[in-house]
Image 1 (tube, helix red, strand yellow):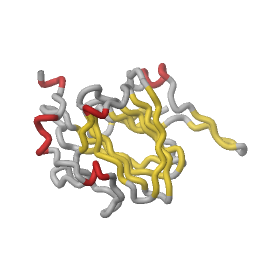
Image 2 (tube, rainbow, N blue to C red):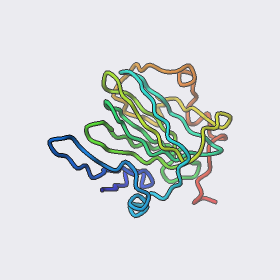
Image 3 (cartoon, helix red, strand yellow):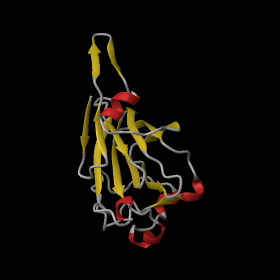
Image 4 (cartoon, rainbow, N blue to C red):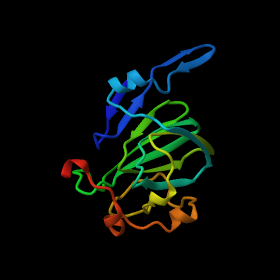
Length: 186
């Protein structure tokens, strides 16, 4: 099992050991001890699957209160998955990292609390699983514009299918007062 910090070191790319033979494959998608040894110490509250079609973009979402860490993976199809550091005072504030996650590459992404998350479907359909550290709390959820030019995410599509909430999301700059504070700056 391989744990790789990305351009924002708190975000981890996880590549599980996949055991393949002529019958198929077998892997562990979560093993608390191994993940702790790899630097991911989290207590998970629930799992949430979703299914979307090509061109769907969900995000950028975060919860300010009841902040969620998310361990995510594609179980069918492929997605481009993004984490954006939205912690005021962070040395990485406003920066993003992204990875392609697919049913074929088995990669996972750890997005810690304090980050906005977005996912874009790049195949005809994709099924995606979220393993979250806290429960959904709609009163504290925020949505940041997927195409905020100051963040500058290089999405693989230009005209995504969006929810009404995502279509009306505000820029990171406009939301500054509502954003979480980086713990290292206190």
